[in-house]
Amino acid sequence: MEANGSGTRASEGQAVEARAVEARAVGVPAGAQAVGAPAEAPAEGVAGGQAAEAHAAGGAAEAPMDEDQEARREAYEEMAAEIQAVPATEIAARRVDMHLASALVQSVAKRDAEPERRAEFERLAVAKLYDLGLLVRLIKLALAVWFVREMQLRSQYRASNATVPEAVVQRAQALRAAMVRVITFWMGDVDEVATLLEFVRSGSGHKDLALDLRELARIYRRDDFRAKVMPGSPGYDPADALKAQQLAEDIIACLGLASETEAERWSALADRAWTLMVRAYDQHRSRGIMLFGSREDVSVTYPSLVTALRSAPTRRRRPEEPPQGPGGGPAGEPADEPEGDDGVNG
Image 1: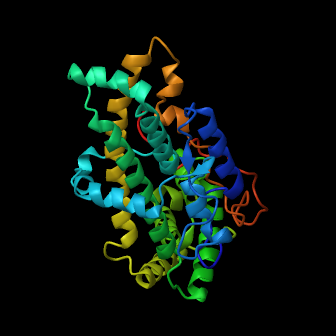
Image 2: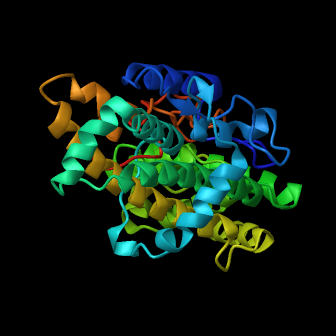
Image 3: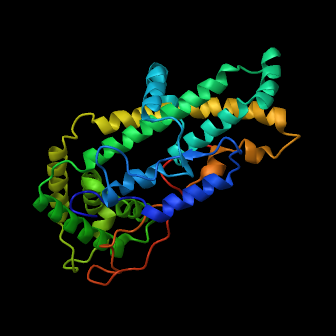
């Protein structure tokens, strides 16, 4: 991870291209192209490698959305009260790319709003089996989801790049790398610990650095860990647990993360907007399958968001970590996690 907190959880070029290929492969209908993130970095001066997290997490399909940012903002503002009202207990999980899912939903809704296919839904509406307003609602929700996800990524970027003294960052990075090496050597074969280490290695930015140090300090204090470590082992210092905790608190204080942040607010809104879009898409999809199931491959024309848009693995090992033992050389590349950071229950 870079000292300025601009490292990413995603592989930059390959992940974006993989998502573009996936978007083309899921059967987005002709005349209603899948739409995706612009190839350029997000606004507000995020550029180049510093924008990798926002760019890779946002994904990119073949073409930019027809609607501009103002239209996405207006859609969000129109739906904001309903989005905010979604209870936390009803939020749908996210395990696929939100931007690509938004693009696919918008594409399906636009296609089905065309006269020939709309006529089929109108017949369902006459029988009170469908609400024609759902087509317009789907498009608005797709635009709102795109907008809140973009705002979430921007706010995360700003939070990750808040001012933390360079000396603190360097000490924290060095301590994290040393603790990961020691824990990997002594407890890397414990499933729970191995999972946590993979998560730590995938982090980026100052906030992740602070959270990583807290988790590593917790492992250092575990009785089973202390029982395994031989006194005087290379790289091991029991005092590192306290040092890690103190550095984490210093970073958090610099970032002002003690209270709810802008990033947390947009993250909560993204969860709720996503939930509404998924509900509406599932309703529309079920009626589309009813209407066209005997005439076309509805697994293509009305795909599950999870099946269609499951992201390529994105989490990668940081270059500085870890060796085979506390004093050894670099270990081999670990297996990627099976999914990206966004998705729904399919």
